[in-house]
Image (cartoon, rainbow, N blue to C red):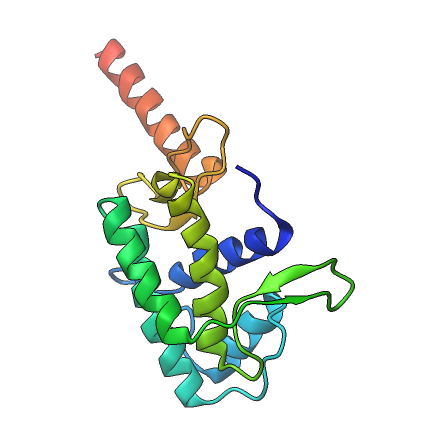
Length: 185
């Protein structure tokens, strides 16, 4: 599956956005407008003006809708959720070549809110996965104490953890120690 630069950026953004949601006893990853502004700047979101509490609330709402897409049981459910999200954002596909990037497609209308911008571009990035029959690549970490979202871009769709150096390694070490303890004991 060919993933263009702008699609990859949108995938990174949506994963990071979903992972800002507080899980269990975690703190809110986007607690205020300043954090949202930092988030938008760190993801190089173009055409984002001055952000407000209304923008923060709207981004929190779409974050929950994106989380539901990562939890969807099948392609039909994911497609329905994506269609609702993208339609509500009022997508307006247009070609652009800003900030030194070659031609690419933006799906948000000029002057769109940050939430509509994210919903349109990230919704379309996820739509490409459903169209390609690759929606199973939209996953949650399998570590019991971690449910972070990620997109499995491995060749054979075998990635199980959000980060193999943390969650994957921690579980492998725990399994190794359990085997050693059982063998010794």
